[in-house]
Image (cartoon, rainbow, N blue to C red; front, top):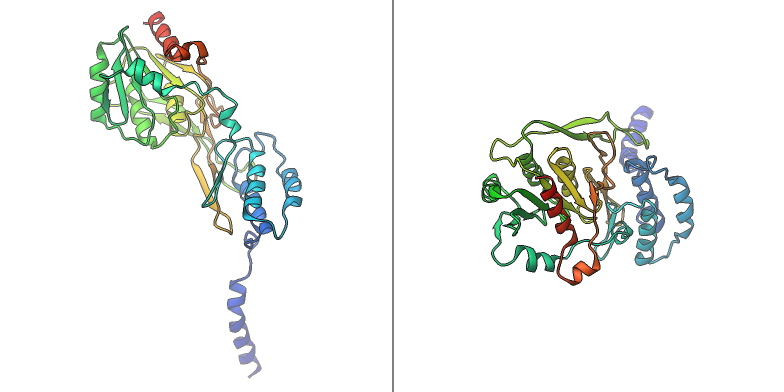
Length: 336
């Protein structure tokens, strides 16, 4: 009888054991949300040691600012400021009414892009459109392709038409300034038109544990050439700090080809696969969580430097001239 009583008591307690708060569970309070966010970064963010960030010290700096009765706006501001210590433009905290990000990632750089000048003085009225790309032939017989968003699809048929039309040109400018990324499939499909052989373009790693240096061995990434029309002449790829995500991958691939030169400003980076998580109050956090390396095993998460650094000059801009396009035209004429 006693054994049966103990057995029944254990059965009654099982639901309580099942609902116990696990080590990584936090309650929906200012302190709980703070600790949850700090731990997510501590265990999943890939660049703490690479950047030599003492994340424990960051915890000690911001934890005293958390109070039980603080407002959601106050909490959001403190959590956003804590994430800004990472100095990473690809780390975002978002609620239903706001998004925190490290704005200096972009604001510390010149914009180096004027869409109005391009539309009026380079594309003009007679440019063509194929998929997400706009293209034309400039008056010095240099082809110009503007691809402002890799979320806009481009098919192999589109690329065949573009490259066939521009085949009479002596060189090609591909403008991906202000292209914030999108679908990597389109970026890869486009890049595959500029190589005749399989090319090693980089490596990728993945988190394998909660430690700051728990990563898989670098896995090689190769780009296969397209089996359709491929461009054989010189190419200049135009970049600025707003070229990131899938665009960063595109620029990295293009940099591996001998007939390509990068012109403009450093890209915005952000090639790693994204990681997303949620705080107890429903706020989301998102950041790159798979380090992407170039063919020399150097990080490209924080941007790719151009071969030729060029900024838009105010004088040129006032006169309707795009300094970066003009420099690319000069380079393509020097290296026909």
